Length: 538
Image 1 (cartoon, rainbow, N blue to C red):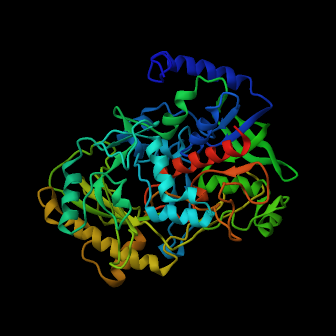
Image 2: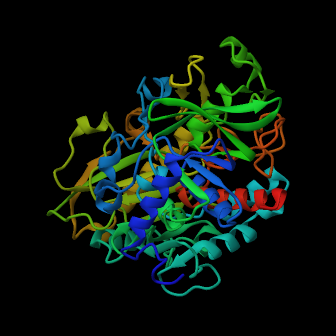
Image 3: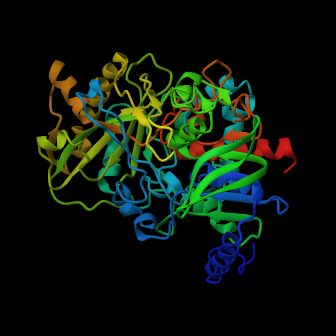
């Protein structure tokens, strides 16, 4: 790419804006492919398909632009939660959390979750991808092939590691630069507990039982480098890629059992746009099942209850909801220490029981207090840090339910955190390990003392866990890939029983990956685009 064509060239923004203004002011009645959702997977699918100049791609996004300091400044990510860039989902009262209603933030706008998240790049564990391959019946979902995809798409800025890291791809990945002393202290604390420390978290560390490392981040030149910015933004000046914001997808339009377009509302105006080759749903683990159900794809009994004509009976739509649930433990700093980068620079994966062969616990150190609405009442220090740690492989499963025939009405979200007793046992081990880390010798120069939970046992610890539980914002698995009766898509991400409709986002995961879900969503997008090109000669 020459300098003039580079998205970093001063002239690029003008050319891209003018091109998209032309394309969106003269929407076509149909496109080759419609990709619904410009998030971590949809951005990848749209770009990869648009690389063929003969393919006309329409990328629909319900939210707006990502050109805002709250998005691009890594330190400001918390300000997006609860803003107009957040869908603002809330789970129903959970009897396993003493009736608490947990907010379930998800990104709304160009970049989706990759524009409001903490920018962590975590590939998942080897075992995750082996499970994907087994469920799909396709070895291309397996770890070795996926490792090749990661190498191909990365532009790694750390120490050279050609076995695990790539340097020529669109995704700018770097270790957190100049990390905080307390991030480095976390690595030393891990060593004190005989937990291995690695140069980066996306190599051997996630092929074994885990370890600790400085976090890999999607930050470039001090600014967020979302997957939308990595994949779609450099293509905005192309005549065959139209990106339409403020476009809320209501339904997939079927002709018989073939998806032929989508019904959407753009800036308040309803419209239908056709898709000649296919439709891809990349709306996330809540909106994708919602659109499927309103389109007549889901559990027959539930659809008929609301008078929705059944196109395909798939009882797994909206089932199997998973998320990493976290329990924050907090320490008071002995003196103020400003957060650096995103404020989350050290990560760790470890196991709750010695006999495990892979980590089932996830730890992200956060350089400021992160209480729940319940634990905040215990007292939050003015200057402190949090071990934001939780269940990497939860056993609890939730579900989504329709509440209305109106596509604008919200779903009922039954997250079911801690509904499986095994998760409570693992959570107790997680909290104890947090306390061992935070109270290790390595932190003594920086902390005044532990604020919460303290040395709790039995019912008191159980109560703390239920009060502290919050989402990691990794909602997934609600349209799972597989071959059993509860599967929604096959190994090629095609929705069972219909034609020309695929799903590409975290909802297709059979099990939530071990770690942050942004990087696996990029792989899901890459695999979806690859299989569509193969199937349709795109």
